[in-house]
Image 1 (spheres, rainbow, N blue to C red):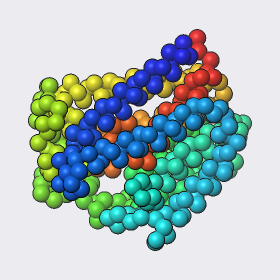
Image 2 (cartoon, rainbow, N blue to C red):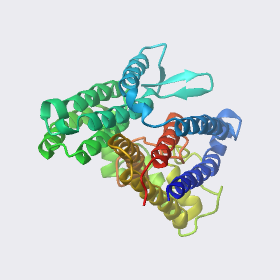
Image 3 (cartoon, one colour):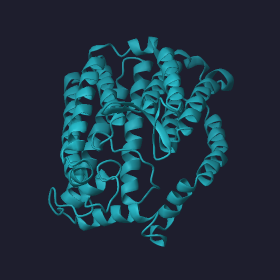
Length: 364
């Protein structure tokens, strides 16, 4: 049974990655040929990310996941240092007003992705060690909230609201399952509403995203353009799609076709059948992940798996929801499928850790 769980979640991940490789090339080849004079530009870079991710995944599979517990605080300190360094001009790379990346020749590294993993490891370690204090406000709720707040502020300075929200959601889920008092969680959520409102209203591009979400046709050639083109792509695919490689929206209509809106291209080229198949694969992945969580051998493994699965699940829901017009544009990639660099690599690492937990789990 243990081996079946590991083999199945590995197989589902490989299938999703293979779909991603095919769709990244299909969605980006024309754009890459026009901009970089190389239709394989994004595919080659993505394959390099896949190679790095594969190596790291097998490394974390070979190392006992419980060793991460000993390095929870050092990992968190490293994450804070990297988040500070990326904000320094000349060290962090700035793209379109956002300073989120370190640049190493042809590779970019986004420290917020490492911070996500570090915070999940820290909170899982904290909950497993402070089980008897988890209902205490000062000693059980405040420490992880302070860590979350510190990391969130540094990520917001980049700025990156989408990653901040996803991190907060994952931490809240972990604390909720740990049975922290509901009143603490509700109070924090209520307190965050005005802060979130200020963050949205203070940035013109965020206000524009909300307005585009509420009524994209009010400005179809401006802020509503991306959502409209995404829905056109999904709608024009019909039941079976227009055929692999035959998308019209990728011809400079739909921005970020190979990253944030790759699900829309899947819908256009592979139709409803293709999108439902992708959703079904993610549902199987989540089902297997829940089995790993339920049978984790210790509390650290339980909450570590819960945090990692919650992170992947949240990204899947938001990305597909954005493509369908159910959520405002967030800029979160579709796990295992989107061209994403750091996010893609750390999603693979998350699978390696899940398989590591499954290896030592107690399965009937």
